[in-house]
Length: 430
Image (cartoon, one colour):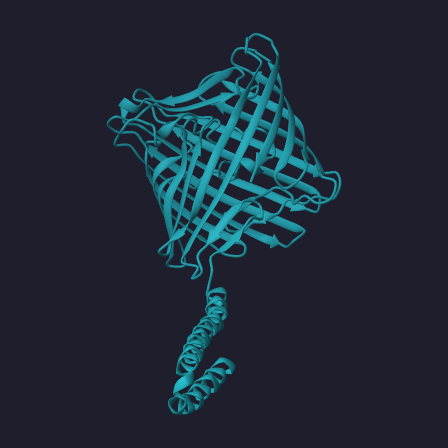
């Protein structure tokens, strides 16, 4: 407005000066020059006015851009990006478990060593109303050898449907994340023993959960991602109930069942254990030949509880391994494990999956003493029984870093071996 008024004044002045110019011919040249200067000044004023209007509009555009919805980036515990409309989400995580082993040798001659037990990258999120997860374990191999969870999932009918490569719904300890394990290795009632080599399967699943219960069922092919194509199929289901579920006290009960039916191209279904820790001596307990077309039928019950700093967990499982000649072989396995947090920790309950997580860490870190007794037996073959007891300590430095120490003493009743193992893990997960 200020520049517009100035332009009007200049134009008016030009008009006034022009009138006497015509009557004073001797001064025509001087007047002409003055008129030219005034015209140039008017043009300059108009230019300044245009620039001022543009400058006034720019801040408004910047404010509009700033107030429009923007993607949300979160870095707490990892990296997570969510679109402005919350329809798309992606997060990146990972875990490194670096182990070292030394043995008290008896009959067996295991080699003390170091290894990356796990080295995973995890990508998960949601898109178009579907959840997804893709996880690669580089410590297990490249491409399909190291593929772990790889699925899409969607909420429907009051629960969650999953399609792809994931763990069947069986065994409490098997379904517990490796980042939350009490000891460095899982007990025999899991893919570390009873379901040896059959941890992740390709199939479909449905899981429904409430504040204190879960009910899940899965159907799958007897093929992990890197296994040979075959026509074997399996089914597994698990239900849990927590009659006590508060922030400082949880009591959990559960039951599960599993059936694996070998068919054309199926690999052998084996129960085998490393009874003195990972990389220690192993003992085969029972086998179903894939070519036989027989099956493995198993069921288990579980109980667990966390009361303040104290925690306990146990499972009992029985499995029948079909034989082409003669009766089935019955395998029984059970374990009992527990821990005590020395400086106030408490293991939280994950109601959505019916398992326990690691205690949250605050201040100067958290110390936890651990113990387990583990046993497995083929009741149809004399003296084919194996057991181990473990003592350990966990030190949680912060939510991402912890150190674990385990001492395992194995006892193989079949051959009399009593090998022991000292194991140390550095674990970093985000």
